[in-house]
Image (cartoon, rainbow, N blue to C red; front, side, top):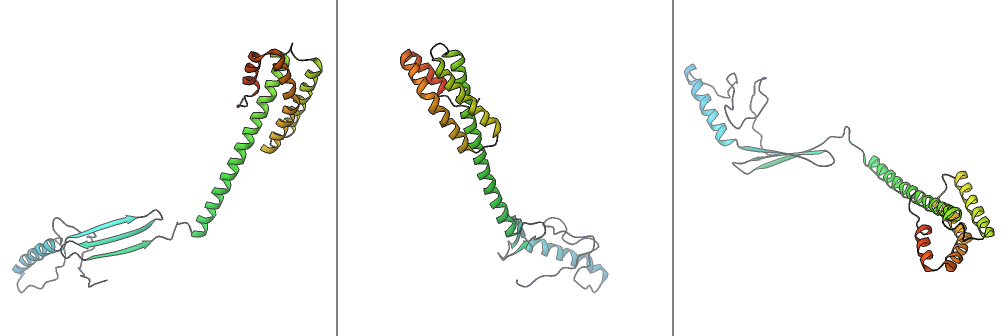
Length: 213
C-alpha cells in the first residue's frame, strides 16, 4: 500500500467522521503553538483542512463464502485501496463442502428409488382391488366359476406377497403385477368380448386405472 497518514486519536474516539468536527475537543492536535491564544485558531484550520481533503468512500462486500472485502477510495485524489478478509473460523472446508454435495446426491437417488417403489406398490394394490371388486360385484354374473377361482387365487397370492414384503423394490412389485395381469387379463378380455363394446369401455376405466388408492 502507499503512504499512510497517522492521526493521534483520543481513547474515547474510535470513528471516522465526514461531517462535524473531525478532531474532538480533547484531541491532541499535531501542532505546536507559540502562544496559548493561537491553539484554537490552529485547531480550526486543521479541522477545515481535514473536512475539505479527506473525502473517503468505504465499501464492504461479503460473498457467499463469507469472505469480506473492504475497499476505500479517496474521492479527492481517486486513489483506491482494498483488503480481503477471510474468516476461517466457522467456515466449511473444501472437503466438507464436497462431502455434503456427495451426500445430497446420494439422498436424491434414495428419494427417487423410494418414489418409484411407492408408485409401483400403489399400481399393484389398485389393480388387485379393482380385480377383486370386479369378480365379487361388477362382473360377478359374467365370469365362470372356474375363472373366478383363478382370479381369486392370483389376487390372494399377490396380496400375501405385499404383506410379506412391505418394503420390496419397485421391480419386484412390477413383477407381481405382471404375473397377476397374465392370469386375469385374458379372462376379463373374454368377458368384455362377450358383453360388447359398452361393457368393455367401462371395464377399461376400472381395471386400467393404476392411480394411488
